Amino acid sequence: MIDEKTFTKFLNRTDIEGIVQSLGNQLNRDYEGKQVVLIGVLKGCCVFMADLSRQLKVDLEIDFVRLTSQGKGLTTPGTVSILKDISVDIRNKHVIIVEEIIDSGRTLKFLFDRIQASQPASVEVLTFLDKKDKRLVDVPVKYVGRLIEDQFLVGYGLDLEEKCRNLPEIYFLRYPN
Image (tube, rainbow, N blue to C red):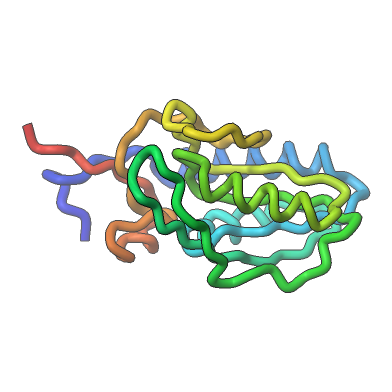
């Protein structure tokens, strides 16, 4: 499925499991005895969020959102639309927004502000991969599995035109010289 001339392995299964376990341990410490709602941003978060939720030993609910951004270029944020909203009551609960990867942060900032307006006890952001150098808006990201440079990745939920999400490892696209 993966052409080794085009894609190079970035993270193997052991690397991924270690990152997920580390994030799970942090959440178990920080949220012991608290009601937690994981809100995953579809579609990419599904694989990661499933693995992460199995690491957690806290009182846990899971829900998802699906957003789309109709941007007008690099300098204009465009309009964020909600395709699927959360369906659980988050008031007075500790919400953790789960992303598989963050780059510009524009859509995430919209979601963060929207969740925060719903009166949760707290809101934090957790991401498996963070392209912090690409951030165009300020959004607080508390939990980061790994900081990465700007590169195109597939596998473990990350897609190339809706394909490759099911790959158990993460690969980066090699650009021709």
